[in-house]
Image: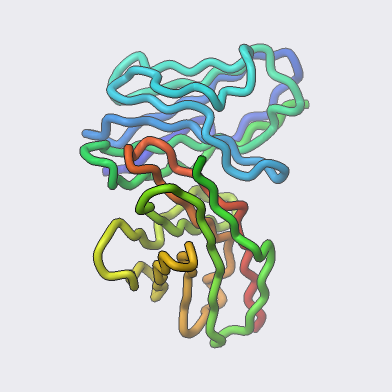
Length: 115
Length: 113
């Protein structure tokens, strides 16, 4: 398996532009997590999906952020409009939640720079 | 609410020396605990995990960690550090439902030749 695949790996954009980050889950996994990593706040959970349904989006910073799972293997995280403070590395992770004891596998991340 | 504290932000050790990275957690039930490693510009790679059973767990790359319930700790150890171990290390706790993985702030390890 190729693991969790994220794209793009790097994105540089200007303030006000729309940004879309993409994530392909590991085949057979049914849970998807989006995390954001910054120097100031470390790794923060933004949103969690189980079986394509958003379960907990309490970590999404504001309405400019939205996430979707159009199918069981793919997710997008959209920021519209983007702001310089959104600059961070965004990770997605997938897992197979059969019981509580499960392991999250992370993608390589998407580094976003908003100018 | 669950939380993880990694008291050491930076640690420098000499190559060949032993290593211990500290991790303390706060969780109301028996925790599921993890150590991940992040090399520069890379994602998070799982080093080891504790779910139950033997409190000393072995991981990849020669790492091990010991769960001590009385101290709410899950410290990571390696007997002899290699230059390639230089990276950032994250301790994490997973809730019993398996849907909330909370990370510590990370410890950046530097290895002197």
